[in-house]
Image (cartoon, rainbow over all chains, first blue to last red; front, side, top):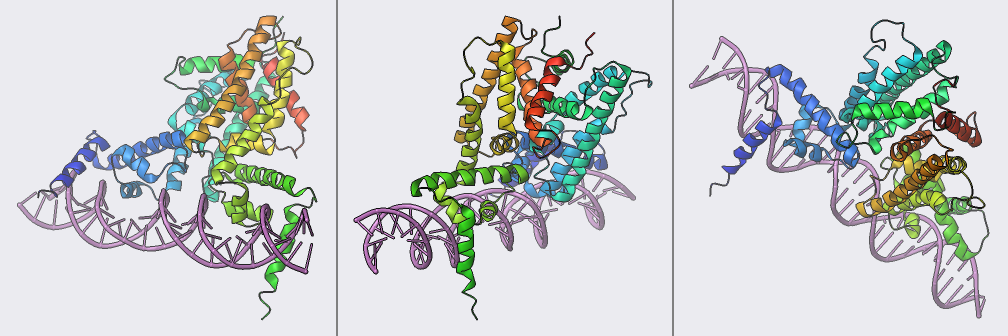
Length: 217
Length: 217
DNA sequence: AGGTAATTTGACCCCTAGGTAAATCTCTCT
DNA sequence: AGAGAGATTTACCTAGGGGTCAAATTACCT
């Protein structure tokens, strides 16, 4: 009999789970966008972009699929923004911590720390694991551009380090790509919840790359 | 008018392109399977698994989609076999080149050479770039198992090298994963058709990993 | 309270692409 | 040559999932 009475209840429950904060009404919009992005990033990374349906993401948030379209124009746009978030974490922060008189090696350490922190985050992990191929061509170019810029940062640091003698002579291009490889692969095996913390990982990575496997005499 | 006359010609032409060899009739089957696998691997890597339709693969080979089903049961099976081909290239060859009295370092060099050769090949590139997420769970386990076995090989080599002093002390687990990262990322930036040959890449990689970026005094 | 804008949703559309069936073609072998 | 197995194709089916719309619900404001 009272069959219709059940429906609104579910809606109420979902409303609460959606976001408990009582923020301003307009900031809510931006906030919820972020929550969607984080969730999408996580699920994309876990199951893969194409294995993830919009209903999956909606379910995770206890909302319905059309609601997602209130915040984003398309699945593609969600992925694009996720990846741009990741890239922005590196690009938007100028490198010099204080003043500009640090060695290339010091800058490299700073860069590695920042990059690995980004890569173990939901957004960074999604950037790497999902890749740009699912994006439509125009968006792909945008993300590719960002990635190239990041690569350029590393090359510059290496060049500077080689110049000031804090880094051994090497080909910046190849070295940078091998180095990025070591870091970009991290999402495939490292879990923040595991034995070693992010700081530890940064240290291990630096050890691996700086010291080398050949025994020092 | 003579519209129907065109069709058989296309079929004839495609027949020739399909495979020029005049092999035995039964070996043909296995041979064509390989051709499909190679092509699929290449296209999967270029466009991504889900962006590649079976018609794409068929077109590339100038055959029709159902023909693919004469050689494979499903799209998933194609990917599985591609990835198994890659893994087999490493697993199926025992490591010792001649006798067993080589150092860990020597074995490592041999391993890196073999692994990179695999990874720049169509099958290896597809293994890395497509990943196992598109596979259905059971097949995913099969490939994961193979990958784990390869990782174990590297860890063993590192342990051996540390033990015999040819490799500096290090944590085999972390080191192996960082090392694999450097190599697995190769498909994303390296082209065999580019400036440096595979042998050169192997050398650069070994330099990067063995020597380290810290200047040797 | 009641009007209004923002938010959310159920129901629906529809195209894409994996997969199938049955007919046709072709090769080989006697 | 002709029979039969194997290979290939045309035409088709179908499910899944991205995307849309109008209706309903909620939240804010005076």
